[in-house]
Length: 324
Image 1: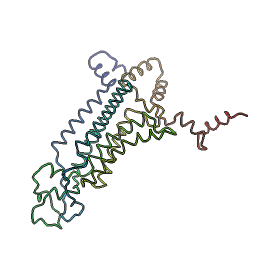
Image 2: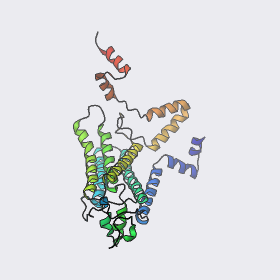
Image 3: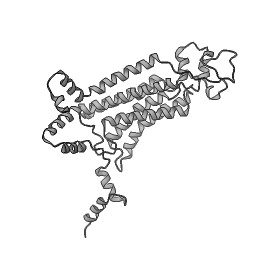
């Protein structure tokens, strides 16, 4: 009944077909994501938690020159992976669909991680380690009592209010959302998680993660965050990168982990064609086979030959294959 409504003539049915057989929903969601991100950036101020001037954890100096600035982080973890993916698409020519979902996934990963990070930052309002240096409290402020932002004399709006955006680390979440996504993509294209993968492939896979870790650690050296902020920001960025990557690609241990899921338009047409000549149970089995998430691959079957813990059917195959 639902399929008949979609295939029916008319403008409404055509819009439904376009919505279900294209990535329009992803792009609409991405535009909304950008709109909310800009709104949070310009119209939200963080909660200002109370603090004490004798709190040693908040007495670190305010570094005017950062080891990795916000602009440099955007270039390294945002523009850098994007350029790598574009060069890969031009050189390898994987197909429009493959290149499309790969780049779209990177952009969604970056801005989704940034939006979640900023929402948490503003909602919690945790003071940075250099808060007191930013605040410049007025003379006579009691040192052993909890005080609020009203004692601060800093006139620069961004410098002052950014002092309450410590948790989680935005640099860390952005770095792992971009470079972490690139690492997952490289792992899938090179089949890094297959048995006996080359060391060179593993090093290439780890390189973006090492870069993201260095960006995160720079925030500790600049006294902008503590280890708790950096760790949670890194986990947030990597989690978003993994979830976004898996929306378009199979698990990294899948035999076809280097190939994205089929194009929605092709899948919809194939499903409609099969539905016309297949029983519902047969169609369900066909779709299950096409979108199988099994981790078992041919390489693992070969690896089982060298172990005692492999499947029973593999051991039986070995015994029958041995000469009498």
